[in-house]
Image 1: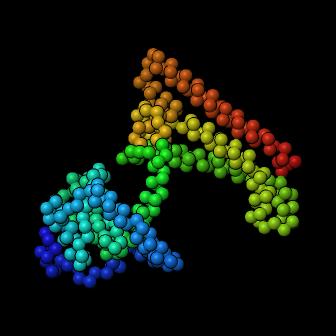
Image 2: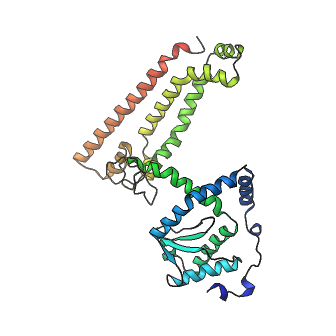
Image 3: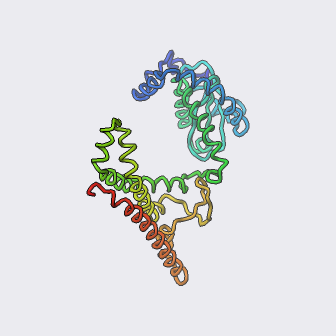
Length: 325
């Protein structure tokens, strides 16, 4: 259905975005607009990077129209007409297995469809998706979304030169980077608990002396508490590392193991940890494979023992400076 074929009773004349925007959405947009010079900075940023995004789409995507997937193009025009948008943004489709779409651009908005959405959705579902993106255009969400994409490109592109983020990026997200983030969250309570107890052992005389000499509260913390607890923070981090070394199920569930040895943190080819490898392989192993798994478990035990011993040694270095003494 083309835009000029849409019945008049289906056009939402002079539709205000406030009639369908969520209150939290309006509050967030208002908060961004209240930041001094925010719109000016964002628009200058978009002028700097919007053209590069358009060139990437022209190079790696298919522009839809009356001759390229005309039924989707008709649904796109119908969604715009229904929301009473008087211009027709360009419509692109790129090769992406996820079912998603987005509207980007400020001076010249455009809608981008993933090929996964085009192959999976029927006509009514596709109209719903296109209507959703038309709502973003009418609400002027594209200003901040485009600025975010440009910032991500500026920040991610230098990282992709490093072997740790060289890609190709895994489509499932089950990578070493995600597994590392999960382990970091799991060991955070151990590190914070140890650090808190060490900071609490700072001698009161040290704190009171710093305050008596005219130090502010932050200066007292910086000059008396943090130096005293530095070794405790290090030991807590090493204890957390020992906890992460022995973690099994979190890594086995999150990580998509391929057996390859690589330093790429975002690719789909991931090595397994010793603990997860034992948990996954032991039930189906026999003979020499069992011996290899037992030997790897012994290696893991030795590594964990060394980490804990190093943490204990660091803690003992500060024992004579405890508050009791």
